Image 1 (cartoon, rainbow, N blue to C red):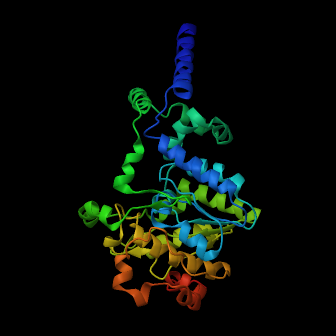
Image 2 (image 1 turned 180 degrees about the horizontal axis):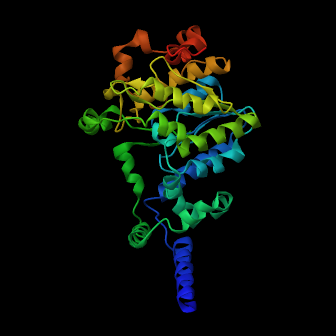
Amino acid sequence: MRRLLLACAASILLYALAFGALLGRPLAYGFLERQLDAKLARGAALPSPKLVILAGSNAPYSHRCETIGAMLAMPCVNAGVAVGIGLDYQFARWQPLLQPGDVLYLPMEYEQYGASRAAVRVGPDAAIMLRHDRATLARLPPDRWAGALFSTDFRGALMAVMETALAALGFDPSVRQAVVGGENAWGDHVGHTLALAAPSRAVLAQAQPSAPSVQAITTGYGSRLIGDFARRMAARGVVVVGGLPTGFADRPPPPATLAAVRAVYRANGGLFLTLPGVSLYAREDFFDTAEHLNEPCQVFHSRAIAGALASLLGRDLRPAPILAAAPDACPTEVANPPALAYDPPDIRAAGLQAARGAFAQEGEP
């Protein structure tokens, strides 16, 4: 028995050393780590009060800090990377950078609220922490330590060897920018043009996304993480504003689902922002998924968000900046300019009532 226990302990030690010190996933996870580190570095360099937009990939694809920050006259960082990176890990990294007076805008994807503890435990951040960020891992609950330690398997080891070899040979994953676009200094995704969106039109036409149930949102571990973080940051003096992800106008989430999402913030000291259209757009306005607007519509949506945030926060609103590489017009903007343009005078006149218009129909005071 003693020999068996020693053999088990030795195998676990060997496993930990292999994946903690030698084997990494520089291609599968490396770009996520680099994106997160770059956004954190920008956030650390910005003065307060600043605006931080944090969600999954809905944040960089559908929101443009370059536009929103300029219209609010606030330094801004787009902190979103991807759904699946543990919210507890992201919150632990961003918490030290958020100061009193900062504005934290959270247009979280619906699936983030219903995420289970088991799913959070073994996301890509588990391997990243084990290999490169054990300091943050040590601050998380013990079940995250076990999740990180056993976050991969024999197949993962083989992939790690192949990816390390490819990286050593100079394989550059950034070539994908020619297909999906790149990233600007604010952390926004850029270059996801109407032309690059064309190959995804058939897939978008057939997509049938659905939001999690009210019960999943109400009891989800993700909702608990978001609510706890909102409460801690609000107590610190950070202005926490919940929001909605973008989605297809022909697949709207039920009002009860929206109310459940709103409650996560309102019950924990946060504000909540909604646009008159509840962040829903025609399918032709998207890039490759229901949470990724194409670049022209990203800018269009960001102007609306800036106006609503200005009304909600009582800030003056500046004209939208002229972008260095101005994208084409958003199809929805071209089709409905008077109703949906959300120019500064329009949104200021509408004020907070317009920003909360979607929920006014539910009887919100």
